[in-house]
Length: 333
Image (cartoon, rainbow, N blue to C red; front, side):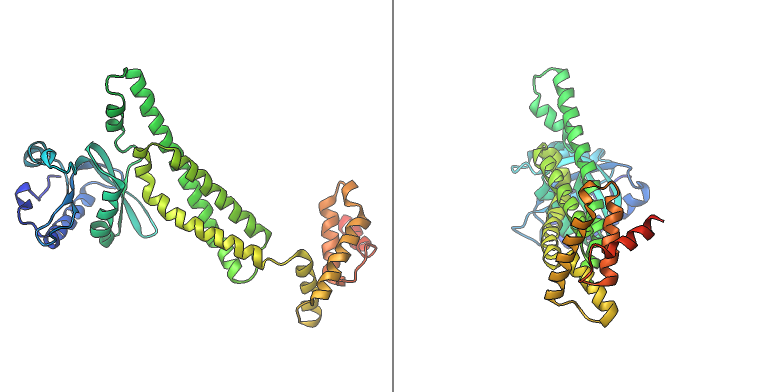
């Protein structure tokens, strides 16, 4: 795919005109390069359009960069005083949440997370694309700078380290998204219905732990690797804060076991909630029944606890340890 845009267009170029042309180029690219297949790109990340004086906005061209663009990059782009040029590979990625990822792999020049964020806002958001720096972004550039004059073995080791960091972050990201999705599907509806309990708290703790692990790996990674996950990290960091608030709310609203059992009994018998006094009596009856059954010395602890809870639900707050005998015997039969 050869770009239909040519360097001559840059003189006096208006942003509104450019964006229309760029969207047409993206459409051509999508037709010729399915998900995962790469073509080339060239970017002037702080370009000043004729109709937006004083504003620095990315200019991007995609496609095979031979001929005029190759010459332009060598003779014009690299001479820009603010060094805002870059080139490399681009490809369409997976679609999630209605947005398709659009990956930039840097091979030469400078491309930062800030540039990507601006490009997302002014160019990609309208066509439902999420631009991202590949986790291997700039590996060659980083190694060239860090390992100038170093042995080939050291360069290979550094490259493998970057790739390892990218792999760790990718795996952590997938796990974290799974944890957050589970909370969204299971915990949130239960919380809204007033039914979130111990299981919901465990799920929220697991999600928070997954985020802390991802955050630790992200902050410990090389800046070039971080750049490939910066957008995802910012989004998930916001979600993690919401998870923390939800966890506090669930704990605050969670009913005690005694309250749940007492309310189950009185709702069935009298169609009402249990009083504080009735809940307190239920709490004491549970303690007495647990002591009566000597759970610490029994192998079938789970079965005996179930017998206690079933008795409490059917007999009510004033049940005794002896009341649990019949239920326990029936469960053993």
